[in-house]
Amino acid sequence: MEGFEALAKVGPAISVFGSARTSPDDPLYECARRIGELLVERGYAVITGGGPGMMEAANRGAWEAGGTSVGLGIELPHEQSMNRWVNRGVNFRYFFARKTMFVKYSDGFVVMPGGMGTLDELFEALTLVQTQKISSFPIVLVDSGYWGGLLEWLRTTMIERGMISASDPDLLHVVDDAEEAVDYVVSAARRLRDGRAGA
Image 1 (cartoon, rainbow, N blue to C red):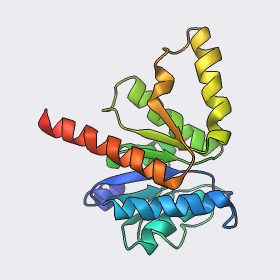
Image 2: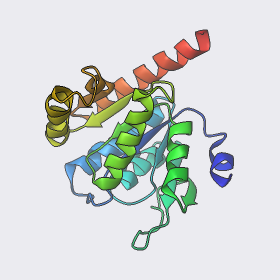
Image 3: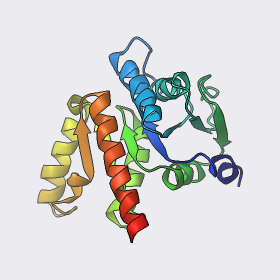
């Protein structure tokens, strides 16, 4: 209930996922910061997991651009507190409740390189879109060098063994810079929103 109340008036938003371990001197930190900034300039709030690394970077970009910077934290034994660039934050005890907020209040996902938590969030969203449990929304992966092996595995091993449909990998769009990521996710989100409004 706290999550619904906190996010009910956020307006259009895009979620940005990525590693908590990325340091500020990593070029991908600056990429995530720039994504947060550009999303605000295009009229979107930015939602992250509220932690350090890529999440902090995206929140920072949104904050510095004067936008709404949302953090959805998770209570973990060794997890740090909410990063200082969040201006609207909620902490969750359970992953499932937190992921519900990401899906309910986002018009699209930008996925930076990350670890197990990032993969969990990515495949949760991908499964919901693939099974049409939610309306289709854009999912963009940033850094083809990082995600290329995963996409190749989806397109070869999984398809060849009949585990997924040949079109399923097309639900993911891969880019290599902040501007392309934001252009894709915003234009696709707006097309989908306009389509639902006209239906």
